[in-house]
Amino acid sequence: MPIWSNLKKNLKERVILHEVKKGDSQAFVWLYDQYSRQIFRFISIKINSLHDSEDLASEVFFRFWKEVNSSDKKIANPRGFLYQIARNLVIDYYRKKPRADLILSQNQEKIVENIADHKSRLDQKAVLESDLNQVKQAMNQVKPLYQDLIIWHYLDDFSIKEIAQILEKPENTVRVQLHRALKALKSVIE
Amino acid sequence: MADKQLINKIKQLKQIKPSSKWFVSSRQILIDKLIEQAELKPAVSFFDWFWFKRLQPMVLSAALVLILAGGPILTVKASQASMPGDFLYPVKKITEQVMLKIASKDSKAQMQVDLAYRRVEELNKITIDSYTPEEKTARTKEVISDIKSNLADISATMQNASADKMAGIAQKTKKIEQDLTRAKETISSEVKDQLAEVEKIVAEANNKIMAVLIQIEEDSNNATSTDKTAVSALFAPTTTIELNALETTTEILIKKIEDK
Image (cartoon, rainbow over all chains, first blue to last red; front, side):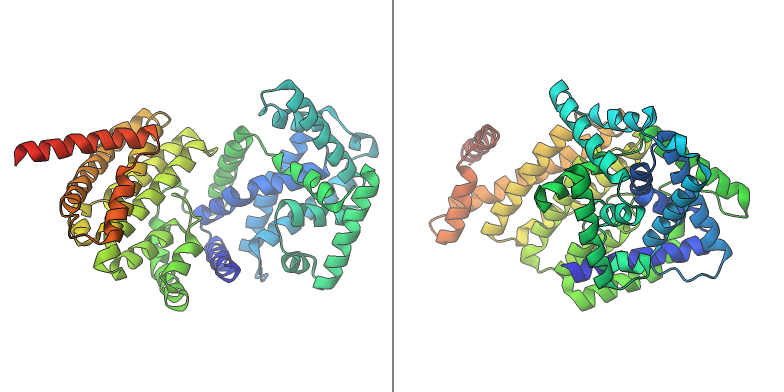
């Protein structure tokens, strides 16, 4: 029942945010436990360094804590706000890093290797590694907004409405842009 | 390439995960930073529900609103994804207790067993999820304690259950017994004793259920066709495990006859 799962989700996150604002570190840790893996994934798809992905992902949560506790900013959606911070950190990361460092590095392959280790058969490992590399490289070649839309909708299961709230755009605009994002990714892969 | 094929390729990226080492160390670093930064109360333990107890009036009101607006079944469904240690897990348990209180006498025992089985499913999930060993042990302890409370007075409540409900209860308790036996192989030694206690309670419940079913079988001349079908279905084994259960039942039946 979507209406009840949304009600539960909204209630849960509003209570958590309320507690985080009061300086409750345990509520904040709950947020970390729920979303750190997704935030890490979001960042590591966009940048090619495992080490930097880990650092940035941790920084997202620290910034979230600082923002929530130091400003009276109204946050409607804590999860969305985490992603906004992650986006901004990735933009800053690209501004600071020299172009030469932004090519596919050994660290990126390491992300894929860690996943492939879960599979026991060598042929499965090889296929998985190759597919993941292909998609990840293709994602790196579409524009950042398209990357965000694809990750949010297809990996993190954000609804169009939630994405529209994060981007502060109308839902129809998001729908059209998502369609374009898929098209762009498809043309890179093909 | 079709869109569906492309989306499947994209979804493979879901396999990108951070290492558990980073997850745990980053968590600890964040907690340390927060404590250092301001006058915050330290995160003593993941399962320190002191802060939740402060929230409890608010959470209870929220649970009541959900129950009154949505009905018992919808409310339980809304929170059923929560796991031990999760924020909404106590809300899930509160709504389950409310449901149990308002259940009819006939369905109470079934509900108790269903809730116990839900705990067993949570236990199965905990053993395969990627928690740290300490988290696993803590969550397992909580779940096992809950199974015990769920089955606390099952012997009394099952007296009020009808025959077809009894068959359902028996099948569920058998499944609980089987799953607990499997869980024993993967849980830590710290909780094995507690699990053994729960196994004993389940075995006693099973024996009591069998005794009631035997009585129904003996009275089957007066039973309705539904009762007979329900009981016969229980005694018709389809797997080795059910065959073993039938052999146990047969021994009980023989003993009952010899004792008469």
